[in-house]
Length: 73
Image (cartoon, rainbow, N blue to C red; front, side):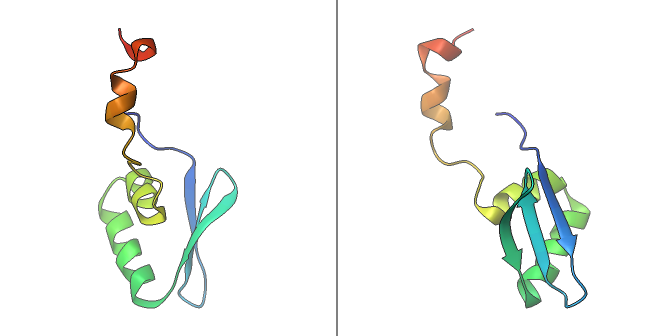
């Protein structure tokens, strides 16, 4: 599975976090969710964490795409 890329996040003075993907806003976290996200992002792979928190992670078609003739090696 390809590794997600293009995610960034900005922490704001009011404690909220805005996650962007390739320059477009993908999600905003506030309060306890923002704190939990920041703790998780500091301890793991940030790209995977941001993909998971925005919902852009494993849409369910990865297994089907792997079996497609175009993707056979």
